[in-house]
Length: 178
Image 1 (cartoon, rainbow, N blue to C red):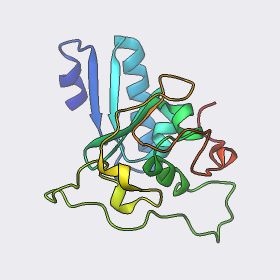
Image 2: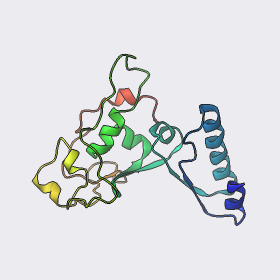
Image 3: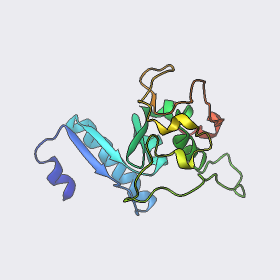
């Protein structure tokens, strides 16, 4: 009923906020299939708000990664998943389960705790207090920067100037878009 109401005015954009949360895998697939069909049938854009990187890898053309209300990375899904330009994105990807990883292997985690919703953020990068790569300049907020090819893959970090600066193994994310 909610989707029907949203489509009644033939929108150019559909915003789906956590549409698969707390659903079983079969129902998740049905919802994602429905969103894809609606996108094609109504020729509209879909903004999918989710914390499920597996869903993002499967259906998103582009991804925008946010941390504490700040956009830290934006680009084509395959570019972001294979060559993250922000340490938060790299940390999220390293924490994803992988079929290549032995079952007994521990998942990576990001040290520290995210800021509270009412906490005052430090100036500059909100991720700096948890970042293993933080240095003085992180107290200033860099712009979304396209210092590498492709130019439409933007990261908000002072450090990335080389391919895969976070040491992530792109082969580990083999299930992500090519």
